[in-house]
Structures are given as structure tokens and as C-alpha cells.
Length: 147
Image 1 (cartoon, rainbow, N blue to C red):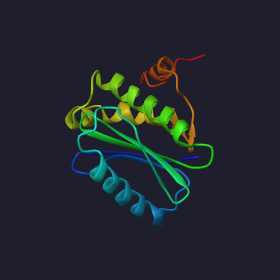
Image 2: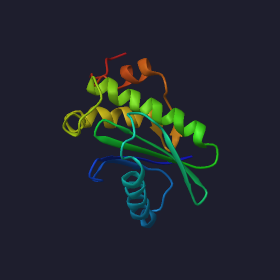
Image 3: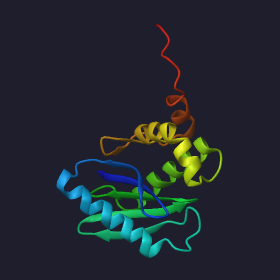
Image 4: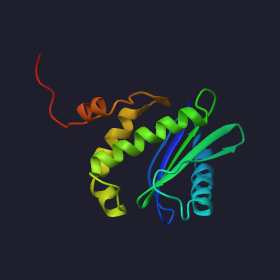
């Protein structure tokens, strides 16, 4: 299961978070742990260079994309390999929505579409859509047509 997808700015402020199957009382721990992990390890890392960590019985894959740090946390069948696929789909979708590697301002300007992409990629803790064209089609924000 994908336990969490979290995105933060370079100062460690959380921009987007999605938790699945994580009790509310543990979320604060995960937020602070991931932000500290990023602060300790993401300095000087190239865009989309993947870093891997494990904590307790879960795997964490994280990267930086422009001014945004992206963290994906999984357990069981979502090991480092599956999480690296998930994070590459997420980074690709963000670049497509923003048109380039995002600054924090551009990320926040496109916040709505990024959240829609994230909702289409990860659904209830499962990696749902990985096809770029399908994700674009699903987030078009057009009213449904009548049958």
C-alpha cells in the first residue's frame, strides 16, 4: 500500500499531502520525519535523482523537482522499485501540468491540476493510473457530456 505522498517546498513547508491507512495520530510524526529527511539529504541533489530510505517496516523514495521535494512512502508490495515507478509518474505529471520544472510559485499556481493528477495516479493507497495520456484525459476539467 502507498501510505503517503507528500510534497514540500525548500523550507520544509508542506504543499500537498495524501495519507492512506495512516492513523491521524501518526501523521504528524511522518510529516516531521519526511521533512527532516529531505532537509538532511536533498541539498545538492539533481532534479529527479531518486533517494531511498527505510523506516520501521516501510520504504521511502524521495526526490527534488525544482523547488519542490516529493516523498512517496509504501509498505508490503510497494517496495523501492514500485515506489520509484510511482514517483516518476508523479514527477512527470507535475512537469506536464507546469510545462517545465516547477518553481514554488508555479507549483502553487497549478495546485488544483496537480491535486487532480495526484488523485488520478494514487487512489486509496494503490497506484491507479501510470499512463501520461490517460491522466491528461482524466483531468481535463470539462463538464461531462450527456450519454
